Figure 1 (cartoon, helix red, strand yellow):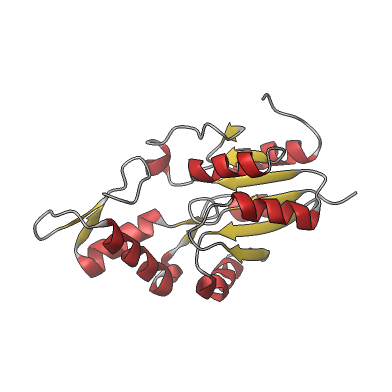
Figure 2 (spheres, rainbow, N blue to C red; figure 1 turned 180 degrees about the vertical axis):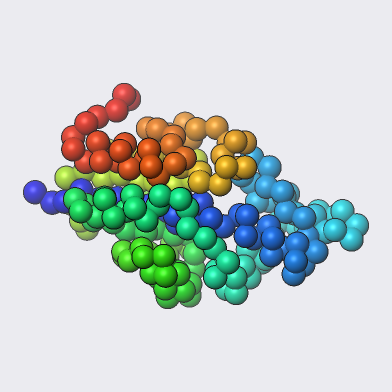
Length: 209
């Protein structure tokens, strides 16, 4: 029988990002960034006049952060230890919504924190089809998907409904503003607790529909 499979997001699941991007926008661009409810659009204002940045400007800045500032990012507490436990019994893939040009940087970034698993860059697309392809490739006995965005849980639920879905937001300020994803099986924001939930799924324990 094939090993179980964990498919996990990176930003705000394995690595903190928003807090570091907020500091960078303030320092380098004189922009106040306050993601309301976890949404990046309509969240940034110029300190000079309080004007709101257009969505296109925000996405350009987000791309700039990942091109030049990834060294700022820090490890989410307990993430490395949780993945070490999971890797004893399962395969792990990091599915991140960065462009392919960021693959080497993301692999190196995670390796600096002792996280060395397969990384797939998905651009800005839905994660439903990529998760379906990974399930078809690995043919796992059971699969778990972890992400901070409800939209990806909805897509995975549609594409591969048998995959267990764990909603995690590791940034406390955002977690406090965002409710559980309707299409996730559970919401856990701490890897110390989440690892127990993941391993239970791998051991054949089910969750309520």
